[in-house]
Length: 464
Image (cartoon, rainbow, N blue to C red; front, side, top):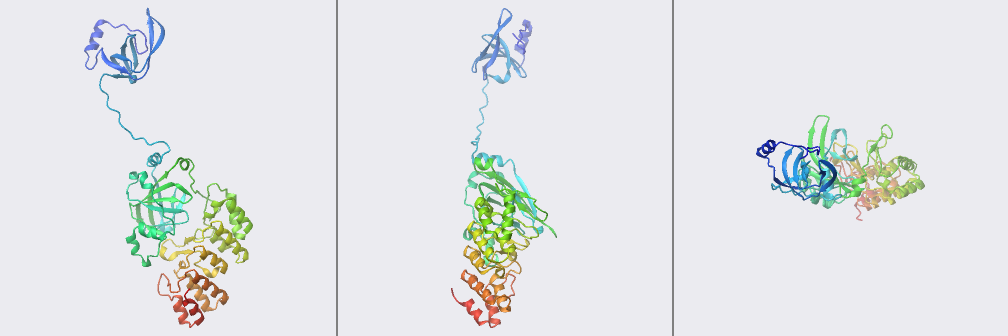
């Protein structure tokens, strides 16, 4: 017999008998090796070598001593690690665990559920939700807004931990897909809206789950749940929790969040994946100067910059390249050519912005909401490429064609140019009967009739 240090030990006969009689112990309890055991070879009291008993060798268990077990083999007795031996007792059957395959959507989902993230914003302070370092607009009244970045899909689950891969394999809706937006996202609540006008947002209730994807990272799904709303005099906090779920190994290893960076005091810029900051600076400088050659070169080399949105110093809203160009460059031929280049390179002519986040029905505007500030060629390019001619001016929510009508009737500016802009607006579907969203204001037809402006009234009423 040997000790746990594998040194021979001699026990008196009485001690061996006592060990055999102790409860739960037996000198000959059958067992099997479930791992190889290395034992010394002893001859004439001397260790002359070692041998290894393979897995499956039958042994007799003499006794256990915490981490060590004394076993008896054909070669003699030896102390072995208890973990390498199983006794004759029937072991519990192994538990079946469905382990997802590495780099599978199931594995990424399981990992994501261990890292639920939290985000919060004050809607009355015009803040935005930060979702994985990308801004998302979630307004007072629980409305989640589409943008040039985000797409959304509904989800029937109410707990993030209940989400399954099948829940993520759905069609996501983009801004402008109005029929899908109306049918998929709380159509009953939408019916109660005046004119069912706001198709740029989806209503979200507390505890409701919404799926989101960024257009530039379609293999990453964000699962969001609105968990709380608290309202005070000067604040309305909206809180949400979310999961970030990559659907393949590439997006898991190389996520591309847009991370906010401070560039100058009073401005808010975002990094673009793979685009150096100096390229962004050059892009903004080219927009300010309407430098067509520079814009062509920059957007050809960095096509993702076409989707770039930022908040310039001194601005109350975020802008895209077209909005910044039309707002900052002189109204001349260079700006018209620059507008053409930006649209051809994918800068969104349907871009919309929000000035006052407390009231989305009256405060959202697009690039043609102020047609009096656009050149005729610019106005037509924007309308031809999808800008909504009936999208209301921020405040008081009046029709864009209404501002042109007032300019015409008041004799401000070049009357022929104003008339040409009205004709362009009408050509692309402007509604001369559209009223201010706030009510109590004449539409274009009524204003022309009241002023007895025969020529203008004929233009407005001619079918096209």
